[in-house]
Image (cartoon, rainbow, N blue to C red; front, side, top):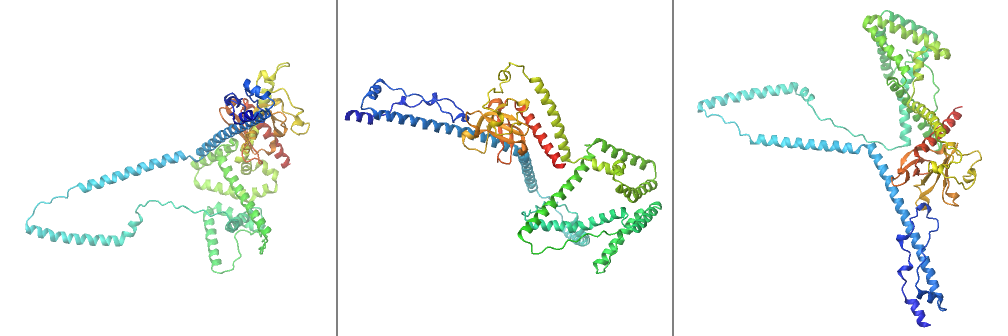
Length: 581
């Protein structure tokens, strides 16, 4: 008995007892949670006799230990395989992001230009060295021998001519040297301005400086508007009469120059200490805000928010003005730009066939009547202004770039909706035909009711175009475990949600529900060419995820993207219209 125990204890395990890795099933990481079949170890007849031996319980325990060891090895191999696939996909994602960054920064073009400039510099240095060598190799000019008397005479005359030449050069340099130096060409130096770091205090101070600097201009514009609105009847009447009389007699430009000189004279007297409260146009009083001192932390924070809001609104207004001017000259709205085009042609022809005095008189009279009379009537009658005030109609109807994007998105949505409805009618299959056989992208079995699977309301049903969904795999780049990184399943689109059903049995927690209103970005994405469907996928970004969720390996990617995008635009436009109302 002791001999048999020693034989069992020190006998090595056979190689056949371990699972052959080449015969292991090639399971994907998405299904790694299922139990894998384990190869049954082959035992010899002698081992069977030993197992049947009454003294063989130790052998059974060792066999069970070997099986457990094999299972742990399989789990480790599957986990390593999943991590390798994750690393491969992450490498592909990072390469795509690096390619996009290179395209945006144009680093290659900058490198090429830098290399060209370097070659030019080397060529110039080489040429410069060659010129220096040629000058050094040139022999000095030889003078013919002369007699001693002739040499002394020439030497004296050369001395006098050199002295005269030096005096003339000195006089010329003293009188005109400074002006000559001004015309000397020098390489332009590009000074690099140092940018200050972001500071709430500096932001507030700069906004106050901007407000103080723009106050004279804004005050002048408000005073002109008050003059046009007949805020002071006597001042507006006097200004209208004086202006029309000056235009009629051709004194409009001298009148404006005289007013500018008068304003500068008044400013000089005010700077010298004189107290003058007179203005050419009527002044409109503004409510002065009391200065705030000893602010608390919350008040300072609110002040910073107010400053940021004012800066945002100011930049938005400036951007709207610049974009409207650009769109006016770029024929973005052809019917509006056509009016400007016709007006410019009319002014051009009038300036060619009529004297400048008559053209100036007509323009001056029209400007005065428009400023003092027509604008006054239009401001008092908004409906009349909306019908007949051509400059106002042109300016209000000019679109900005965000408005153009909204219009194009709405047009694309309408086109996609009609296309999707036509494609659904054309691809509907008759009764008795399985869609699995027709397209290879649908599955006919469900684990239960749709709203129960995703914990939604009963009225949330898949859209007709995706009634049976699209087969795909969900790549969640925020997860690092292989079983959570890639999941196989089916994607559905409802009226308000994007639903992903995992194909793993009993895994309702693995299902993904995304609200369409929470999506911040959606775009087509090519994940990896080794995946089914040539790696076609859809990337969806949400506030709750750091990296976009990718629905990859989708054969009918374009149809799914058009459906999701059209439904997303429909939901966002409906929400925007409800908020505006």
